[in-house]
Structure formats: structure tokens, C-alpha cells
Amino acid sequence: MIELIRADQYTKMLWKNGAGFTLEIARSQGDADFEWRISMADVTTSGPFSLFPNKQRIISVLDGQGMVLHVDDLPAKNLKQGDIFAFDGESQVQSELVGGAIRDLNLIYDPAKYHVRFQWLNDAAEQAFISSADLIFIFNQGSETEVNVDDHSLQLAAQETLKIEKNAGVTSISFPKKQLKSCYVMELIQR
Image (cartoon, rainbow, N blue to C red; front, side):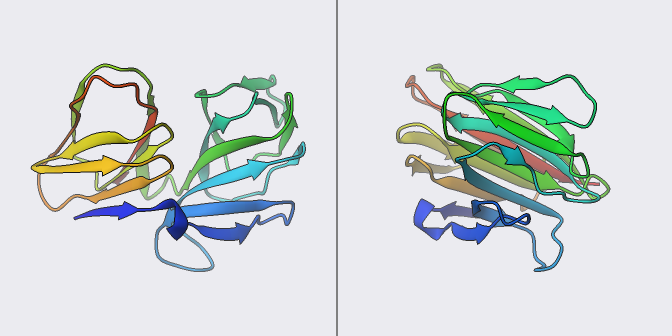
């Protein structure tokens, strides 16, 4: 099954720590606890991240100059646009904005239930790949781009997301045009 999730369908929610808002793109079932969630956040001030016990987090900067993350006692991690960083949801994380507000993309998931792959496609080449993931999300950060999923051709506008649920076998995905794209591909495989 293929579902187009438009930006106006994203759900605005208060952060768990109450310090800001997130736009929830998609999530697994369950209000109190979820197995996975994909969201965008507009971060306007430096500060602590919310804690998500028993979860893993992957984050990438979509817009802005970037941020420095201080995670537990590890060396500081400088994130610029397109950089991807994974960390434990129980970690003490402090963000320090570099040059003002940013927007980031987040995947939070239960590692006991899912293995994930998170990548950024950012070039003008034709690209194709196959996936046996149970769920595939393609978030378009750039201008409108064409995406082929098996025998279906779709136009994905800026800030829109494709959700692809595996029906059976392997899913074929391609970006057939030589146009500049900026898409994040997130694959979730049930354990």
C-alpha cells in the first residue's frame, strides 16, 4: 500500500518536555507509547532534548545553520544540514544552536522491535534501489520530484512524505529524472 502524506496532514504536538512543538508525520499505533514515530521540529532555542526510554533516535538538520549536540559524556557532535546522527533515547542531550533556529527530522523507534535504515539522497542523478523493509518512508525536503514505486509513478511535492507498506516480496523504488533532489529514505524492518 502506498500513501501520500501531505504537509497539511502532519499533526502539531507539544514536545514531551514542553519546550517546543513537533510536526508528527507518521507513527505506529498507540497513544501512550509508540513503536516508531517520524516527525519534524522547529528548534528556536538551545536546550535539552526530551527523554524517550527504551527507544533509539536518529536526527538530521533540514534547515538552518545547524546545531551542536552534547550527548551524555561523549564528545560534542556538530550537525549541519543533511548530517545524520543516531543516539539512545535515554541519553541526556543538550542542543546548542549555531546561528539561529533550525528545523530537524527525527525518527524515534523501539530497537527491540525494529531495525532501521535512514539515508539522505541529495544529488541530481537517476537513482534506484530495492527494499524488503516492512515500512518505507520517503520525505521530500526539496522541490517536487518524481518517485516510482513498483508500477506506480508519483509526484512528491516539497515537505510531503510517501509511506509504503510492503505487501509481499521486494519493493522497487526509483527516482527516474536527472533533477536535483533532497529526499530522506527511512526503512523500518520488523525484528
